[in-house]
Length: 175
Ligand code: CTP
Ligand code: MG
Image (cartoon, rainbow, N blue to C red; front, top):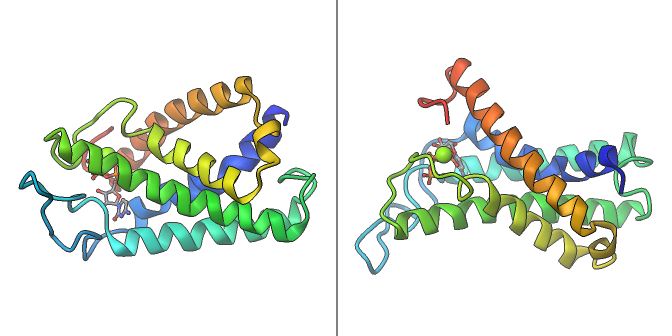
């Protein structure tokens, strides 16, 4: 995949990761439960509404890409496979985001504590893993340099998005 194709490929994961910041809130996914260490399983920053909004948004973007930009969004795959990869990216991104919070809570880091790499990368890695599971032929298409590119792009985009979210008053802290 070239750089443009890589950016378009990863969009469903990015959208799934961004929308909860705008539409999240309400009941936490862990329902307030605590883990064996006495700390919250995930914390109040991971909500059912946020997860649902991310999932819905990721699927809508996938559907739009598959309908209007199929020559750029996984052109080697048929429409059905494109949709399943997009959905896998979205579910993977949301699951990975929860995994990051789970690890943060085990490390006693409070909700919202800025944690370089743990805040940015679990969502990307789990999204890619889910996408590879949905379409194993992608493993070859996303080569090591592409993987490195997506990792760096994600760190930069995450930092930029958080600053924008702070300026727009969507987030309480600029990270
Ligand atoms: N959010 C949500 N549901 C999700 C993910 C995110 O409602 N599944 C919302 C929450 O309001 C959260 C905000 O988006 O505070 C920012 O997300 P994130 O930075 O991932 O959460 P943090 O509050 O930083 O919590 P954590 O320390 O657990 O990452
Ligand atoms: Mg955060």
